[in-house]
Length: 320
Image (cartoon, rainbow, N blue to C red; front, side, top):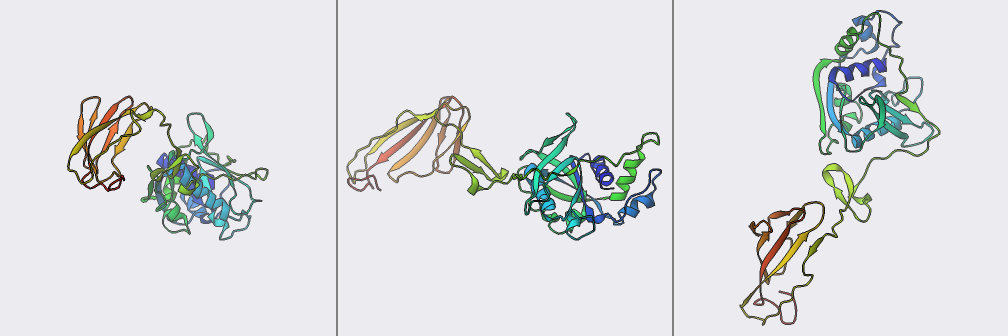
């Protein structure tokens, strides 16, 4: 029954993954043969409607890690057991002998290769469930709603289509000679031989030395190789008489030999130095106001022009 209902939802919305809670199903199904509307309502008697969302691989991991961690996997109905998600378009592998996190692998069906492939952290997947999951049941509304903050994600939106109507429409497309087969297994797999759990969560604190944190992707990224980005001079020397209002002009040239564009921004500089302009190799002059950024493309050079005065410079120091 779980296969049928989730297959119907995924077909109706053309989603990548569909999921419904096990606790919503109250019947055991029906014998092989014709299926009527009363049969459909007999196994799921709640008039919930479809809801859709866009979830990253990270958020799908959170969702299925939650459901496999909480569920009791007992044959008898229990409150925790009802949290187990029936699924279409994904294969969820867990180890019931583990405590806490039990999820060891998460795969999503790939239509092109007609096979399951490991979930991708930052890929955005179209998902579908029902209004009970998206709007009311334990922690699921948050998992498919407010927690979806990664770039490209969209929190769940509850629609008007009733679940049972979608199932009836799905079944009606199958001819009598080739009926729907709900017995396809292998979507929920208990692998007690694998003890290493899956973890797709990254935090700013978990970034290694040499990595930087991308907030909108919740991802640690390796710092790019900047060895090709160089100033023509490492040191600029300037001497002046303390209290003198004389101004000395100078410049520094930066070349971008890296394989990516750079964003230049004037962050901090001493009070005795005034930034005048940035002049690029394509003769575009940018007047600096201390707040603006400018872009340096690969292979491009920019010359920073500045003026220095010792009027406010403390004698014998670079402090002003």
